[in-house]
Length: 178
Image (tube, rainbow, N blue to C red; front, side):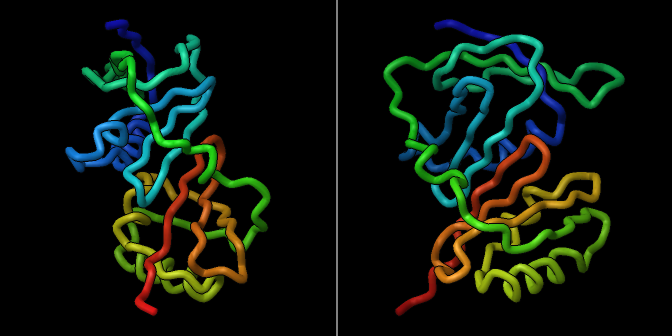
């Protein structure tokens, strides 16, 4: 198998790892998709896509993370990936944001214990969607981050798209019984 090494910031690596499926029956979702400059992970309920500024080009494909090592005195991690052949990764481009309008801008702050509850209420008021609080906590970094939230305003069953800098996260809302 072909292996490659790349560097990622700690926040980007953590974000990608949080969105990898833990379900052993969904093997493809336990892997990482590299598509041009995009690195994608999904667990079927949410998806993370980052476009890091990588010094090296990584061939497009589906990879398994083999190792990760912190680079001394930096926020970078060296990651070794192994190319997986004959794996059908989910068609993530069907789920990412296309032309959905902006609904709001939110601030996520990991140091504020009440921030998650306040943010959940703010998101619900502005988007009419209830989200899993763990999903929000998983995209919170050690820095206060402003995320622009996009979605279809008249359809609360559609996903929300959280976008900042070179990162996009897609979160599916709770579906309540009909």
